[in-house]
Image (cartoon, rainbow, N blue to C red; front, side, top):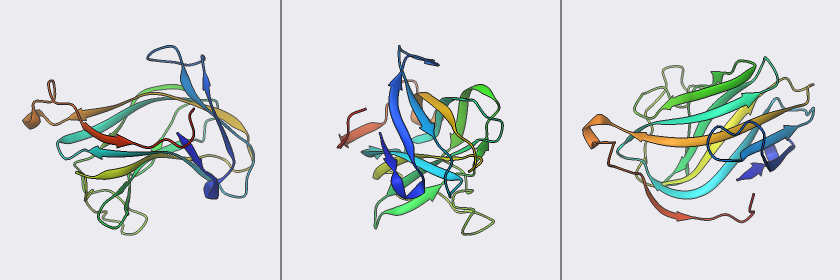
Length: 169
């Protein structure tokens, strides 16, 4: 995972705290900043055409934190972002983002639009909003992708074409 520096300073590291699956989680430590949002991203190449949801476990130490899931897809590096989900203080298990709805990119159009280019996703991002005058920590763990019943999701796994990770965390 890498941090999108244009969206605010965040320190990313592995932690043994708040792990919900396995022994470590991804710890995001943030300081007060001019912008209330920041993004952590993972460069990849995924085929999500038969998938219908992404779930993640997030633990926060503030009351005013929201998270959205974003994708860069081909052709042309199209950007798609889900509506934000408001998180409660403490652990938030199974925070779900639907991939088969028409409510992506509501910041461009209040009605939203569908997620296009799902068969060739090049970047997965988690976008967080918090009080810009505050500092805190967010723990992310157990990101998982689920398929649609029509695709027999019990036996179908998303196809990972390639993963590019310039910085190892």
